[in-house]
Every structure is written in structure tokens, then in C-alpha cells.
Length: 286
Length: 325
Image (cartoon, rainbow over all chains, first blue to last red; front, side, top):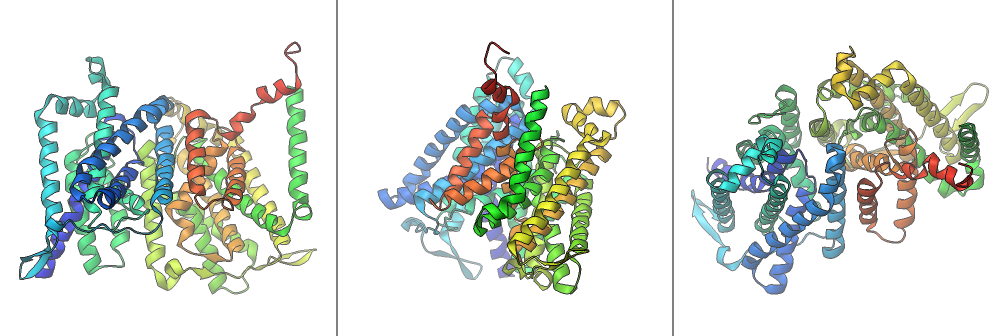
């Protein structure tokens, strides 16, 4: 029984991380129909910046602020200087562009930090374990859980309670109409793109001491994110949240019960959802 | 336009002559490279049937390539003495059937949805190949012995000889690409292009969008199956890499860099990517960076791809002075 609870918490931790990454992806898709493959690179950059900042400045907490800022700026730059230029050529060109950028970032990371996995020590404050259900559980993982719930609440407040949140949600449902009503949608989109990049980087930072940091981490999380936004419904934050947790648990228990089929199952789930309900579980529009 | 036609004939003639004499002109290591280029050229052409002519971008086109590859490997492993050409046909048909099933679910969708569902199927097949070790041996892969090819009148050719393998690949790839070219000239091919331009208008004109796209998707799978089978014979080895994401992504790079707007664009892309990779990987191990930068530049600044840089108008301007034109 205890094993199941521990395993369930494991799943929850990974699910929350996945949600942080996929929320930006799904918002960007909802607003502009751009499936941003480079998004996973932002997550990876976050983890690598965390490594550099922790090693050179000796402070993990600093990287929690600096890395998202840097990556968010990179994201805004990418949106402004490249993505905007191909927008008129259609979605296929946008897909291809972000796909190429994903490769460029992946290789840049290899050049700067090398191909070997890097380890970041868990900050001293959160090292160690707490007793839980008769066994012990690493404090750092409970920190990930708590921290990502805080981010989730912050995001919910921003989207549901502020004016900019109303504009973003309106733009997700009908960007043209919001544009006509006098809001500068491209600028809002640039902000959302940068914000999404920063959020992905933040996920990368807090994931770094927990998972190891390696050049393939972008691709791994990208494939999981695809499953999340497809199953949850393109553009739906609620869908992304529910599906992230589902996928986290699925992987966590899948490894426990059916290790041979765990990988097969998640892509089967994605294919079935796309066939039966192409809009996803919570999506509204196609 | 007669000059244009003449230029095409002369250019085509020189290219064919070069391809025929290539094993004589170049050292063996380059013949290896040329064989691999031919195989990928066919794969890229099959991909461009979808991206260039249907306007559909599949992220998981390696699924059909991998099905053809595994079919060949399994046939050679379990049925001794199976003739090469029949194996090739069976592999192509398995690519066809695979594409028919995947396409049945995919082609109703378009854009990012289409891209992702095709990726989902590819990842599903990849996971099956990775985990079903009894049959596929997972990521350790299986060795394959190159078969002999019996030709009536010519006797038996051993494909262990790279020159023979080159010529056999050349003939098969040339026939397949020719078939693809002729296929696009049929009313079915024209219908697919009309749907790329305006799907609503095409369906109002009475064309069945689903069936047309399914037919093209399956034919593309058939060609990808052939290239996968040839790839296994060339490599003498098959592993899960034949249908992982990198294989799918490589073909996207080839077709887009070469140019999706021209029938031979993907062929040029395959030549460029393989030669560029061969050259730059001897200089730096980070050649993916340069590949990625070239790719991004092409998407941003040269929408027609590399082949778009060789437009007839530009070539003509080299030969004809301003006054004449």
C-alpha cells in the first residue's frame, strides 16, 4: 500500500513539472495555432542555466529568478525576429521553423555544456528526507510539488482575475475578434510566448536537481508535452492540467506494473483521443 | 520555351550519364555514399508527395520506412532463399498497408493535428519495435545478410559487391521515382493538388477528399517501404533507429532544404544533406548545428528551398543579355 502512495506522489511530481512546461505550449497554440517545438528547448535551457548559475554563483535560488528571465527574453526575441516573419506563410512554415530552432538549440547546448549528463546538487535547505507513511521521502520532491502548485495558483489568478488574463483568454477563443476590438494581439502574443518560455525554463530549473540534465531532455519532455496537449485539447489549460497529472500517474504506475508497455500506452492513448475526439478531452475548437 | 526544354534534356542527359558512370568515376567510398543518397532521395520524394503536393506535414513518416525495413529484415531472417525482388515487393506492400491503416485515421485532419497524429503512430510503432524483443531484438537490432539477385540472362549478382548494389538501387529508385512522377500526372494527382490549394472548393466540385488523400498517403507509404527495404539491404542491419523521431525529422530536413515546390527538390535536398553531412562531420562533430542553421535560413529566407534558387528565369538571365529578352 505504501509503495502505491509513494508511487502516486512520484507521478504527481512529474505531472506538475509537465504541466508547467505544457501550459505555455498550449496557450501559444490556442492563441496563434503555432505548435512551438522550440518550447522544449526552453525547458532544457532553463536546466542548463540553472547548472551554470549554481556552479559559478554558488546559489541555486538565484537561478530560480535569473534563468526564467534570460530564457523569457530569448523567447521574446525568437518570436519577434523569426516566428513573426513566417506567420503569413502558414502553419506548416511555422512548424518547420520552430522545428529547426529546436535542433539549433539542442546542438548549441551540446557545444556549450557538452554531451554528458550534469548533476546539480539539491540546495542545502531542501536536502534530506522527511518521514512519510512509515518510510522517508525526499524533501526536494515535496518542494517541487508545493512550488508548482504556487505557480499554478498564480497563473490561475493572472488568467482569471486580471485584465491581461481576460485578453489572453479572449484571444485564445477568437484572436481576430480581439484584434478588431482594438487590442494589439501580436504584442500580447509576444508576451505570452515569452511568458511561456519563462515558465518552461522555470520547470527546467526545478527539475534540474531532480532529474539529470542532459541534451536529450528536451526531446523527451517534448514528446510527453505533445501527448498532454493533444489529449487535454489544444489551447485548454484545464485540459493540460488534468492530462499532465494523468500522464504523470500513468508513467509512474506503468513502470511499476507493465514496464514493457508503458511507452506504448501513452502514444496509443494519444492516437485514440485524436481519432475519437480530435479536439481533445477539454478542447472546444478545432 | 524551346531552350528551356533543350536545357532540361541536356541537363537530364548529363545527370543520367553521371549516375550510370559513377561507380567507374569515383572511389568505392563515394559509391557507398551515392547508394545511400539514392535511398534517401526516394524516401524524401515519397515524403514530398504529402508535404509538397497535398500540403500535409507528417512528423512520423519514418513509420512507413521502418515497416518496410523490418519487413525485409524479418523475411531474410526467417525465410531462407527468398528472392530479393519479391522481398522488396512484400516490404513495399507492408509499407502500403501500414500507411493505409495510419492514413485512415490521419488524413481527416490537417495542419498540426495531422503532424501530431502521424507522430503518435510512429512513436507507437517505435515503442513496439523497442519492446517486442522476441521479434525485433529491440535496440540491439538484427544483422541482415545481403541477398543475391538472380536476373534471367545475366546470371546471379552478389549484392555484397557495392557496385552491383549501386546499380540495382539506381534502377529501383529510378523506376520508383518515375512511377511517382507519372502518378502525379494522373487526375488523382491533380485532384490532390487542387485540395492543397482549396480543400472546400475541391470537395464542392465533387472530389472525395478523404479517399484522394488516403490514396496518396498509401502510395507514399509504398514508396517509403521500398526505400526502407533498400536501406536495410544497404546497411546489412536493422534497429529501432529506422523508425525513430530522428529518421522522421531527417526526411523533413531533406525535403524542405531541397525545396518542396518542385518534384526534384527533395532529391536535391537528399544529395545536399548527405554530402554536407559527409563533409562537415569530418570537420566538426557538431554538424547538426550547421544543418539546423541552414534549415532555419531556408525556412526564413528561401521559401522555395535550394531548388528555388535555380529558377529558369535566373538561369536564362545568365545566357541571355538584357536587350535580347
